[in-house]
Length: 213
Image (cartoon, rainbow, N blue to C red; front, side, top):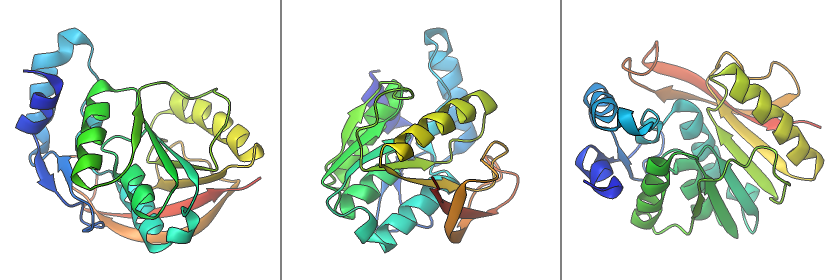
């Protein structure tokens, strides 16, 4: 089965709880999809299917964007660690001039393309690791990426470079261990319904932040 077939066979088209305006190919049953991914693709070194879930930080960030379209309108936007493409699609729907969704996982790239097309959203996809690249976006969006120390440290250093270069950096985070404790401004807070198959609680208080100079 090819990549697109694998995605379609193991997901359902669902609307994330906080974002009824957008429908995505998401795991309808978390554990079976994760297990099937490991069984069929472990030998190929494919990462876990993070793309198949609408994580709390991404949902909060997408909700904020849709409720505040003026933050995206006419902007050149990057959605870093895009996963399902939820945040990128929200940015496109909010009127961004260009949206680039970046995720190094090939399956995520396939999912983003499918989801963008299904939502009539103009989104370009890249698998390049953009950390360390020259900042070239007016707005950088990051949903729920501070779950692992090495990644969070590399990412935050680069995001500060982006902010220093004139980018508006918005982050959605539900209190992950490696989210920065300072240098951010809280913009909004949401109560996001999750699942105990992924999280330690059914509702996560999740905030959207702006990176400060």
